[in-house]
Amino acid sequence: MVSKAPHIKELLESLIEINQADTMLGIYERLTPGKDGHIRTVLSPGATDTGRFGSAGTFLEPSTNLQNLPKKTAKRDPAYNVRSVIIPSDGMVLVEADLSSAERRLLAYLAEDARALGQIMAGINSYKWFASKMFDIKYYDSIPKDSAMYHIGKMSVLALDRGVSWKTLKDQINGSADLTGATITAKRAKEAVTLFHQLYPGYRSYALKIGSDIKQQGYLVNVCGRKRHFFNRIRSESEWNTTVREGVSFMAQAIGDILNDRLAEIYERLDPGVLQILMQNHDAILWETTEDRVHSSCRAVKEILEKPIRLPRRTIVIPAEFSYSRNSWGEMKEYPI
Image 1 (tube, helix red, strand yellow):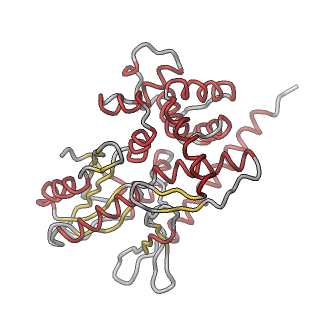
Image 2 (cartoon, one colour; image 1 turned 135 degrees about the vertical axis):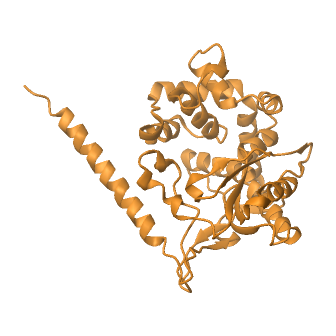
Image 3 (tube, one colour; image 1 turned 90 degrees about the vertical axis):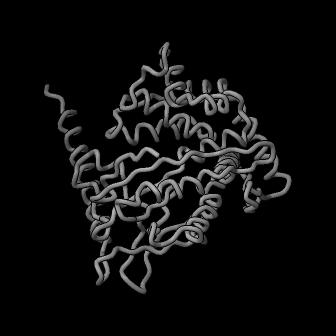
């Protein structure tokens, strides 16, 4: 008897591909430029719980959300590189500054986890290091960045410092398997959760503190003074766990307030002739400038973005990474500065 499984697998893969293509078509269709050829968005700090700018369209003129243009999907097919339609003005170059692993770094300092802080200060790649512990690899630096092990290590660290469950971790890793080649079993995901909190105990202690603060006062205040109420959402254990995770994330997402302040300072201090700010995209700022001013604009932005952040018991600096392109936002290349 011939198994039907291969045919079912091919059918499912075709359906997924059709769905992805339909999604990308919808994104292209909403990237409608105005009469002057410019694609616009409306940025608002009132659209999020964290104070980060949200991006959206408006009925006043052609515009759309430009913060949700997928980047990873370009690996599937060049046609999926929707950022390639964002191009610089004539004679200009696109430049981007991105705060490196900003939320992860801030959360490590807030949680005061000794190992996480030591790795940050020593420049150790925590994604590789954790993957080496998961897969019993002697030299963590031998793990390639394009390997499945690296992606599992990275996604584990970025999820488990927020306290997600093993099931959520498994779903997140397996959900992007077509891009990363990384998959994980339920057993391995459970082991990853246990291992992470053994190696980085500070995060669990911090989550307990956040939970206690929410129960006692009903709100949290981040390092920038932003307050968020949680309205005692503790009717079930799963609901409470979700609330605590949201609280931990809220504290780490103070990066949004920090970046907003830095963005305002860039706007006020720097001559529009040096750079024209285009948008804020999560932890990054995109601008355009002339090619002869790429270096000077990067240096000026770096000085502002990397200003020390004062926390209750220490001062930290989050490094910025720069990239640029003469062609489009979808073809950015690293720019050392």
